[in-house]
Length: 168
Length: 276
Picture 1 (cartoon, rainbow over the protein chains, first blue to last red):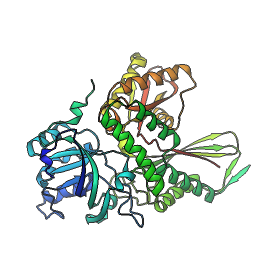
Picture 2: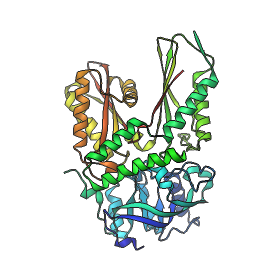
Picture 3: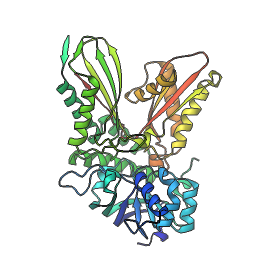
Picture 4: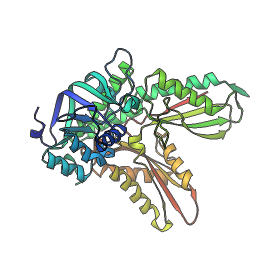
């Protein structure tokens, strides 16, 4: 799927890989990068999902796994660009800085329904911790998802769904 | 005198949290299905449909409604003729520990300095009141940080009046935008002092009905109407359903101050009550 062709407001069903990372994982990735150390995952062209699931019960691929508030990761936009990420998934509006960076570097910010972690877990086929196991729910997980619902919030040209839907 | 044992409290807390985090209450579900009939935005409608489906999956598969199973706030009302056979705080925390392990809930509590996870979702935050009777009544709110982080408090000047209060509450919801998982519930504490005002705002979220005080009820209705006119909509994607309800709790305050606190709650409005 060519993410760059998507437009703000488009609704898609994504099948492929998502890497979970939230506050603690971003802090650690930033530190590794600053220290010139090797990163545990090659994020180039990948999509990061701001999410920390509940523990996986027996017989399930993953626990409840909805998006967390993206704006907490706004201060990591330089890191996102450095990692070469193609997209981010979370919930809620983000800073102008993030929107502009999306336009400048051709990155897409998707949102999905917050508080729908049970429903979204049914679209996850497998989940494997690939880095920072000690962070528990904040570890980096590689998820294989099928028909995962995403809404384009900022497209690769920097257009925003929040602008369009702003208060009349 | 009625004796209430530790095991009884632990089991009650465990069961209440198990239900609150995996089963959407009929009240919250009713608000969502009601909004589905009035929502004008297509994306907003899609979000509300997701929430109905989410509740079905959560209940059917016993999986939490939301990955953020929250920090637990407990309002305890202890009857004067109830005899607690244990330390209430210990029993409540044991119930939390047990629920979060048994039901595979996320442990989201960390040391504030080191950020090291406590691994069992304790401690809970507890507030105790003493009442008549011989019951122990526990109201529990397992609340996520997405909405809690959008809460605010101000000590306004009395001259700012109710208009100033309304402006503060509406601004808090506007600035939060899609972040606290709207359509939200808004708890407002009005009056009291610095700490009691915040407590009233949180406690207001336990209510599911208009205030019995006509003036307060009118304020609740006005705030609800004005917040919904903001157009934030479900998950901030635009729409006419931004807020499901507003609950205001009041108390007298100092002549020199006008405290107001806003506690934002997400669309799932998870809370439970047990009486022992």
